[in-house]
Amino acid sequence: MLTPEEIAEINLLAQFNLANNLEGLKIHAHEASGDTVAAAGRLHQKGLITQRDGGYLTSLGHDASGHSQSLLTILRSD
Image 1 (cartoon, one colour):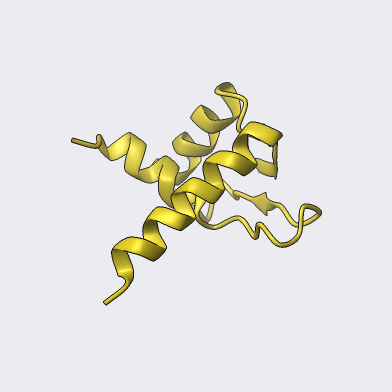
Image 2: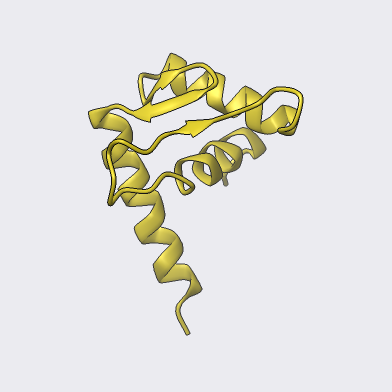
């Protein structure tokens, strides 16, 4: 079973645009939920994104984001 923390990380990874490596995410602590801010910190600590507040995907992060987006596509298909 997925933990709430893992779900938040997957949700954040799914927001990256894989078609454009120059497009990152900026997580604003005063606007984003605490769960999202914490997820970004964990993804940075794991080496999946370049900054604690988002930034860009690393090579490993790009792979993880691709897998998460593929899974969501499969689960959402009819």
